Length: 466
Image 1: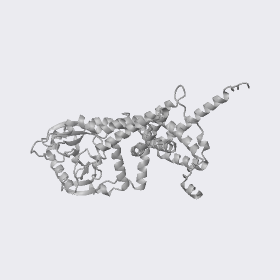
Image 2: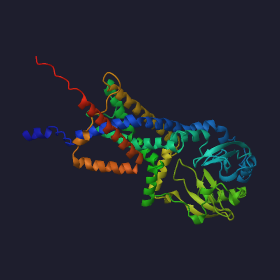
Image 3: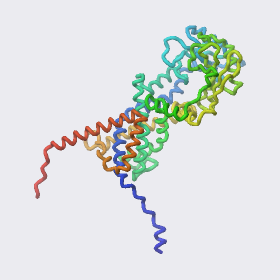
């Protein structure tokens, strides 16, 4: 009978490690400081990121005249030769750097020209009606994604607030802390006795805000970690460490062999230095690429040196498997080199997918909607975090941070590896390490100041005995 009762009795709750209260107190203080001091950077990054995710649809609307062309009944597209000639006639000051043939009916052909006075990484995109040869407009095109003015402005605003290289520190600081704040929040959520996957709508006040903050934060954690990791890959300081790690481990993205004539990185001088390679060559090059299995959308990049091979790239980022490249000899129309996305190392593929996912092009509109939802969730998390700070206040002002000195109660076998891991992460992600040291230094100074004031304050007399 006793054994039956014992078997039916609930198992006792597993006791937490003795160090956990001190570790939790330390996490609470760090999460509080990171949330209060880094949240403004995260808020700006989330707001501009939400705007950038919507910029693809904004671009299609704002620049619809240049991007589209009416499809005449029964009329076929003109050879690329005539389309390129129309662009060069409209802008004789530019040299052909690349051509993006119309990828589908109703789209225009983009002839990308290098012209004097353009900003770095920017070309002049001439939009040509592929059916009539009419030039429908000319816009600046930025970067490999071909961002037009509206999207390019939003992109640079998201990356560095239109402040140039110094402005990149804000976005790197936000990406550096985002993963730490998110993971710390998950650990704190898991330790809360009222943790739940859904917000408690019946609660009120601070408990209600905490419920929304914790539950929504849990649901978007994976997305926030993804945005943080991919954002750091092209940051200034952590990104340089990522590049060195990739090189050391052989995870770099491969390129067309030099013998194949991949001079696309110098495109802009054109064959013979004047961009005057014939349009007939361009048609032959596209046909050769199609024979090698490449399909639109394509970009034909002009070589920098006379006689060098042209590079043809698939530009379909919505399905990264279609990112093959070939080098084509314009004189013979023969494919002289190939680079297949299937042959990329797995890590190089993951990096490509990660970057495209962060930019909102991996799966097109669904990717952009997901990014907007993540950005909106992060904005709500920050607002709820500041609201909790306000709700915890005494009678005036904001609430004080959690108590200092919790690290002293953490056992050395736990504190030492955590400290070493923090140092390693701080070295690899420099802005995280520097800002964390700054937090600790300011916190220590404030603690000394408070201690000095308490020591010099007159002792308070106790009430006389009754």
